[in-house]
Image 1 (cartoon, rainbow, N blue to C red):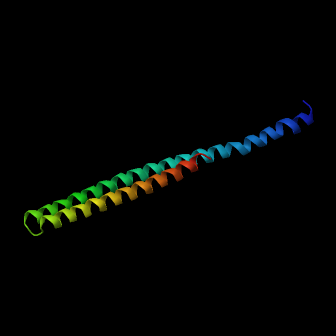
Image 2: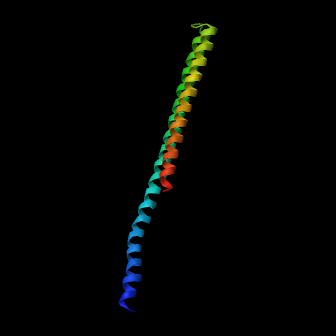
Image 3: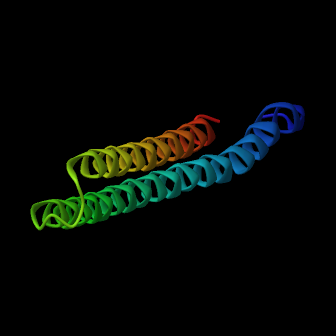
Length: 112
């Protein structure tokens, strides 16, 4: 093997391997971290959604108790119930938007 073969073929290929191998490991770990973060975000979202549902249910029960004990009239009951439902729907929608925006950010960062 001539020395020119070493300088023009083997040496550039060796340098290429030493550059590309760490890059592959870096991006694979980056993707794993993004997946773990996404999984944690989804579990937090599910937990918070369950808490919101429990709070909504408790507030609705209290409202029903007030209505049955005649502390509030039927019109007030209906208005308060509608306000509770709208508030719950807005919180749920806001959380869904935040999750989808976080998911799209994480998804785009893993595609590089």
